[in-house]
Image 1: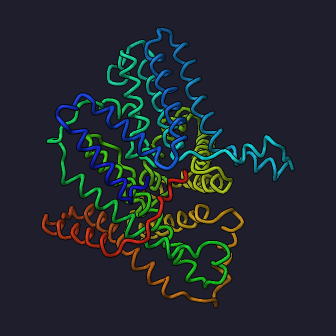
Image 2: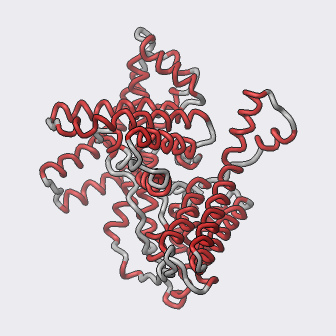
Length: 474
């Protein structure tokens, strides 16, 4: 079910009406769980079974971790929980990659290989599996000394099970995040009141999210379509650069738009989701970029993978290796294809190479140098998006080559102008943040209202053709 569909708006309105009904106040959690089941099963009802199985496994294991007395028993259960989550993720997400690799590199092609290649990819499995791991690990960490945490695990298993279903299936962020950590979500599970909703914050967040998705991303997708193979081969170097720039704007608007919609809708039900994007294209370093882009994923990888394998505590060489390995795995998390592994490796090597020079570069702080650093990081990140847009690594290399060789080929001026026009709001969005940060500048309340009025008007008159969010495929 797409956020930019009437059926979704209808689901939210009906759910809120029932959710805040005074005589149903004690059933709010169950109401949200049922709505989440409806949301997820819309169009693919059988995949709901897998979602419930995943949530059930994590509910049972986290419950037993919490009330076991011996730390070695807790550790064993935690290990089992992590392995089961990774097994589910690997089987459904990476079976196609494994089967295609076996065919390509080893020439195998039997019934087992054919079966693996036909396994469907459940939508959102990367997100809800990571949340399941978060529940298991957070329960272990908070109960290593035998102290049960009343904010995480309820003594009544039925209550804990329902709470876990809500945590895993909460529909605003179920299929594309933000990824929620259990220790931040479970303390929020309580009765909510309609009078506590801050409508100004919720509605502005939702409107901005829909504007980014429906006006910016959906309009840009029709222009960046020509990045696809073999169309890009006929365009000039300038057109290729502008189209790639447009895709960088598109993927930001698409994913940041989804995150804002999810955060705003969750807030309507009384739940605070973490910020997922913080103006990433102003970053002056690759490490800063990953504190601003897909923040819930980068913080998850840091807390549950980078730090446990040693982080930066085991020497410089080990730190560089850890950074590269974590980003490589983060790339594979995005998709069951070697091109995503290359994308992760691209970013991992950038972080590792940058690290020895990071503090020295930060010590040089002037406007021109900062602008140059921002351009370098943005260009590096933008070129890496080719691995998201194109089918494989060889096409990405070919596109890169065409940028340098297609100097005298066709300039598609309508596409160039459209991309620059619809990218301009993203530039203003980031520029406003920098101005506000540097000069403590704030917009007048009436000017803010006027701007949001324009955004709503643009939603009505200038929305692109509806499409699924890019991150739904992950």
